Image 1 (cartoon, rainbow, N blue to C red):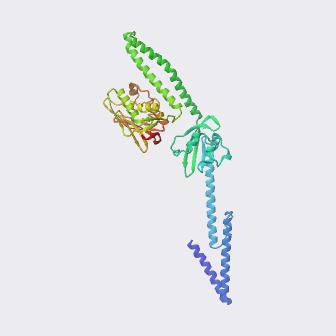
Image 2 (image 1 turned 180 degrees about the horizontal axis):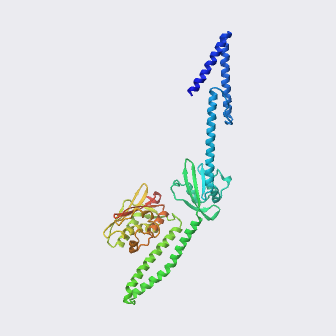
Image 3 (image 1 turned 90 degrees about the horizontal axis):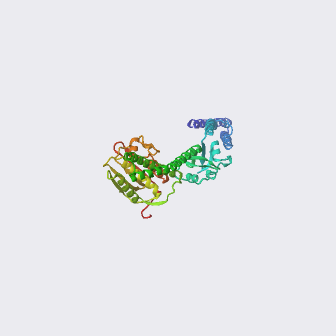
Length: 433
């Protein structure tokens, strides 16, 4: 920039000296200098006007060819214009590749702007959500009117929530899974997947388990009734006592398994967050402690630490099942004489119920799979203790229905701590309750 200024100043000095010399030669040096400078200024303004008109016309075509400093500026603009054009072509090519790639995906992709308005979508999203080209610029919730989706879109924590499963707009037989990710200020990306086949398979599995469990209940009841009658009548031969005792124990174990399967089926098929009962947590924890002491039969030290009483909103039967499963598991897997601690406390993150035991502990590789159906860390010990492998799966589904979570801390050989975390909206203060 300094070189250009010096060059232009040099031209100005040369013109001024030339006009002065010519003026002295002609005897009118002042007039000659004034005319020369006027011509120079007119020439500068003319170049500026050409350049200004080129800018006003949207910089169409190459920059005007000028001389002097305006020529240098025109050359710089021309180089910038060419570089910008190349970058623009590169960006357009990249955008076309992205669009071609997303158009080939089976998953639907919807780009939202201006807090939920449709900006762009690939063909799969248009087919799954029944979107038309004329829908661009309108809110997505105008076309996907499912109440659950509307709540999901307006939820503050939608980036961390699980994907939403819902019927497809205009086609109740198709099931979609939608996941919303927010980025930038008002932009969002919606991923849409067709999970109809997985949904149907899962529904078939649930129906099968529920139906088989119902069908097994009747013969198990009959078998248990006849065994109880035979044992109570004293008519059975002496050699049959041991086989009958084993049959009764296995029948009870099978009945427990069927009952757990039926409970899981009910938890999976019923509506989430349906329980609105007010449960006094202190009373619930004390009741769980009494059941654990009865189950332990004096073999364990069971303590209770309820730091702050609170009222929990939910389903009393389901919460009792979740709390009791953790407490009884702690008793089952703790050695005789070992302590089991039940604890409840409240902080700014919500309410927390924990069960700590002094058992064999759990290897960290098993913790992510603990809530799977029939998953056993030690199959031999589980069978000896009469476990069904469904307890923690039941706990998981109860927590899902109460917007709660579970964390596990365990050290092999030193025991485990299972903690249930309930959000603040599930609590009512003692005074309000």
